[in-house]
Length: 160
Picture 1 (cartoon, rainbow, N blue to C red):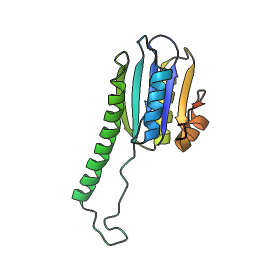
Picture 2: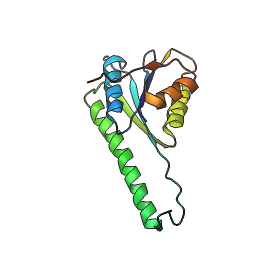
Picture 3: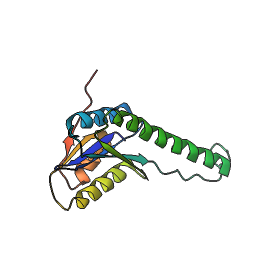
């Protein structure tokens, strides 16, 4: 997953930014904080993280290793730690902007679907008031641009 941002115009906007462990995600978050979030305050930033669902393993894999409940629990703990680290990193970036209220949402599923579903719920929640803007990067953004019901703005990370 790269990243996405959604903003509804007007006072008290809810701005969705999808975050993951990648640098592209932090770039888009910083871009949204600098260019979308109102410095006057009143906006709410919703940090969305799409946690990939746990893979389904056979009792024994092709190499002959047994997939015990301890191994599966360890995989689950690791996935939870990765999700928590991504969201915490994004929240630390937001801490430099005290005028922005921050909410978090971690959903399990394909990032393309999680982002589109969250964005569409936000669009429906606005009852059609105002314009919806999005900032996306990469293949996840391409999917969202094609499947979301709102206008899309693509934000690319500058080449270094």
